Length: 406
Image (cartoon, rainbow, N blue to C red; front, top):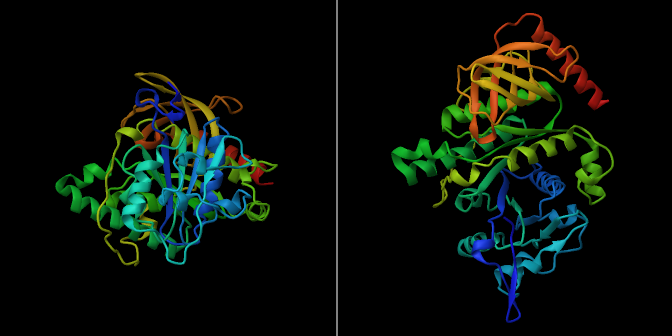
C-alpha cells in the first residue's frame, strides 16, 4: 500500500486509510562533538539510495549543521515557520537537496536554545504528517532528552559515541537516565519495557578492528546493568574523506569512491530499515528529565570484551539446523565465533553447521547459538571446534580488511 493524495475544494488531503506512517529514526549523542550530524546526513542519504523518500529534520537548535552538510544556503523558515504556524502546507517547508529522494527541514541557530517543551511536543506529533517514507531526526545536545520524551512508537533511537572513556561514561549516564525513567513510569515492568527498546549504538572515530570491541563490550555492559538492548549497529573509521565531504558540503555517501565508512553507513541503513518489528515495540520513557552525573562505568569493560578480535565482513552463508536450512549474512568473524543476521527465529543453545558458501573451498564449521538480539535479527554463533576452520576464516577476514583499507 502506498500513500495516496486526493484533491477536493482546492485543498490537499491525505486519507487515513491510504496513508502509511513513516519510519522515524532519531539520532542523538550524550555530548557534543560525537559526530552525530555526520551520521544523520549520511545515514539519510544511504536510505534515500534505497529508493525511500526521506526527510531529514534538524532539531539541533543550538548548533544546526544539516543545511551546511547538504550544501544548502542559510535556513529560511523551516522548523521556525513550522512552530509559528506560518504556513498551512507545512510539508513544503522541507527543502530539496542535491541527493535524490531526500529533503531537509532545516533549523536556524538560536542563542536561547530549544523552544519550550510544549512546542517541541506539538512538533513531534506533527512530524509524521510529512510526505515521506522515512524521517531522520538530528536531536541536539541541548534537547537530547527529547529522544526519550517523544520517540516512543515506530521509532528507532540511535546513539553516537566514540570509544574514548569520557564519551562512554557520558553515554552510560544518559542511558541510565532512561532506565530510571522506565522505573518511575513502569515500576515492576520496567525491565520488560526496556527490552522493547528499538535502536542501537554507532561508534565513531574507530582506528582499528580491535578498537571496535570496546564498543561491543560497552553494549554488553549496558545490557547487563541497565537492561537496555543497545547493539552496535555500525562503527565508523577515522578518515580524511569525512573531513573532505564536510568541506565539499556533500554527504560522503554520494561522493566518488567506496570505503569502509560508506559500507558502514549502508549496513546501518539496512539494519534499521529491516527492523520490521520496531512498530510493535513501543518503549515510552517520557516524563521529567532525571539527571545522572557522568562518572566511572559500573564495571571494568575488560570483563565484557571478547578474548579474540572480531573482524567485520559481509559474507553470504548458509546455516544448517535440525529444524531446517536458512540463508544468513555473516557480519563479523573472530577465532571464537561469528555474528550473523538471519530472519529465522533462533534460541540460545541451538546448534548446527555454518556453511561459508562465498569463500573458496566452501568451508563449514559446527556452531552453537550463544546470543540473540531480536531487535536487529543479529545472532552470535560460537565455533564448536576451534581447530582448522576458525583460523582460516579469520585469515580471510583480515585479508578482506586489508584490501578495503588499502
